[in-house]
Length: 221
Length: 221
Image (cartoon, rainbow over all chains, first blue to last red; front, top):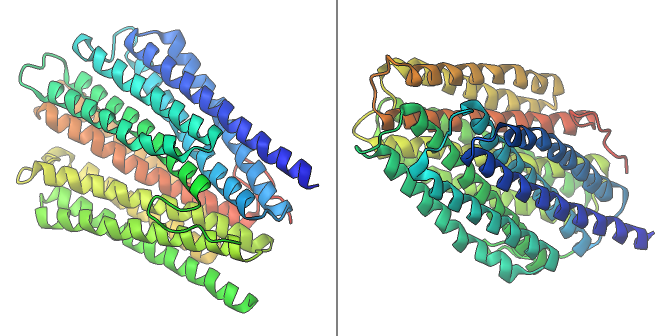
C-alpha cells in the first residue's frame, strides 16, 4: 500500500515536470507567434492550452484523492499540498501564454509589437523561459537554493516592462493607440507569467525547508 | 479534541468572511480613489493591502496546521482544502484593488479615467462588489445555487471591458496614449478581480456538492 502510494506521489511530480515543459513550449511559441505574426502558431498555442487545463483538473483531482483516500504523513502531505499549488500556477502560466497568442491572432496579419520593441519582448520571453526552467529544476531537485534565485531574475522583467512603457508613452512614439494598449497588456501577461514562476519557487522552498519565505515554520505532524 | 477542532474550522470560515468584507471595501475605496482622484484614499487602500497579505499568510498557515496536526475526516478536509484556495483568491483580489489605487496615485492630481468612461468603471466596480458579496454569501450559507449565478454576472464585466476598448480605440477618442493604456490595464484588473470571485464560487460548489464544476466526483474517505 505505502509503496504504491509513493509511486503515485512520484507520478504526480513527474506530471508536474511534463506540465512545466509544456508551459515553457507555450511561452516560446506564443512569443514566436507574436513577433513573427504567425497565425498558425498562435492557433496552436491557444488550442494546446486546453490540454494544460485538463492536466490541471486531473492532477488536482489526483492530489485531492491522495489526500482523502490515504492518510499522508508529514513529508507526503507537504508534497501533495505543494503540488496542488504548483499545478495551479502552471495552469495560469499556460493561460497567460494563450493570452499572448490571442493578441497575435487578433492583430494578424499585422504585427502587434512593432519593430523597436521586438528585442524587448524577445528578452522578456527569454527571462520567462529561464524562470520556468529554474523553478522546474528546483522542484525536480528539491533544491531551495535554486528557487531562491528566482526573485532576482524576476527583477529584469520589471525593468523590461518599465522600458517599454517609457517607449510607448514618449512623445517620439509613432505607433497607434491600439499598439500602445497591446504593448501594455502584453507586458502585463509576461510580468504575471514571471510572478507565477516565483510563486512556484516559493512552494518549492516551502516543500524543501518546511518553512515559508515569510519565516513560518511548517507544523510537524 | 474534536469540539475544539470544529471551533478552529469555524473560526477559519469566520476569518474568510472578514477577509472578503475587507476585499469588498478595498474595491469600493479603490474605485472611489480612481474616479475622484483622491490621493489619501488611494494610499489607504495600498497600505491596507498589507493587512490582507498578512491575513492570507496566517490563515493559510492555520489551515495547513489543521491539516497536519489533526486527521480531518472527509467533510473537514474538503473545508480546509477549499479554505486554502479561497484565502488565496481573496488575497489576489486585494492585490488587484491595490493595483487600481496605484494607478490613481500615479496620475494624481489628474484623473486616470476621463469623464466619458467614468460610468463604465463605476458600473464595473458595482458588478465586482456584487460578485464578491454573492461569493461570500454562498460560502457562509454553503449554498451552491448562489455560487452558480456568478458566471452569469461575470459576463457583464466582459461586456463593459469590450465597451471601453471600443471607446479608447475609436478615431473619435481625444485622450492621450497614456490614458488609453491606463484604461486597458485598469480594465484588466477589474476583469481579474471578477474572475477570482468566480473561482471562489467554484470552490464553494466543490465544498458543498462534493464535485467539481467539471463534474469530477469528490473522492470519499
